[in-house]
Image (cartoon, rainbow, N blue to C red; front, top):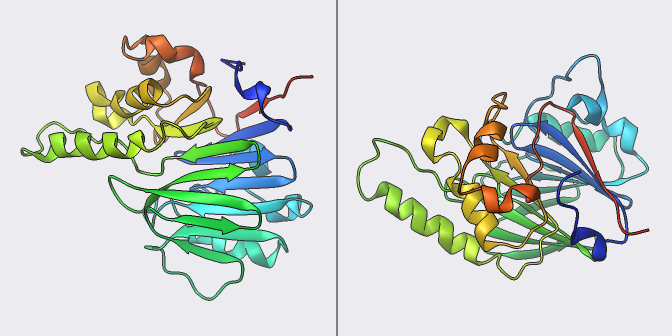
Length: 257
């Protein structure tokens, strides 16, 4: 386990995290299970449920489940999630307001720069630098940040002033997290950006105190983990990054005994 110092000082329960795919993660804390940006609904065989990178609502009926989608892009929102409520009596949806859904219960439509409360948890939204929102989720003594597509998108070939504007917008949003006391964070590191793929996560690590940071938005290209490991701008905070190597990979964070 990497860089546990700090989180165990405040958390009352163990936290378990599963990497589902791309920007999809699941987090179990106490009796609550939170699922973010579910995309790939085909299990990594022969494993099933979270160990296979998918969610089976029938396997979690004893848990209160919160399903988040940061925006409507197909790599962050799979409409299959809207069917889960039929099989799970304690399931809540927290979806960006650019996602159009039919009438369902326990549904919260969220917009940027707002604060919400749903079934005992608080949800703060930030403005994405692409579409939709990022989520800051607080449950008693435990805080989760999921960036969605809030990221420092820098691309070769963009006309001025696109890249400088992107940098400014990203840094403005991350500045709002400086005093957030985040326990775990899911932050993009997109290998398609090549020599710029580290920008968003390195700035987050520099500006935000968070002991557990999980890369995302890399699809099947796990080589980004080596890029981050070797990058000089990441090195001072490398112990805070949890490298991911496969779908369904699980990380267990324990409180102090």
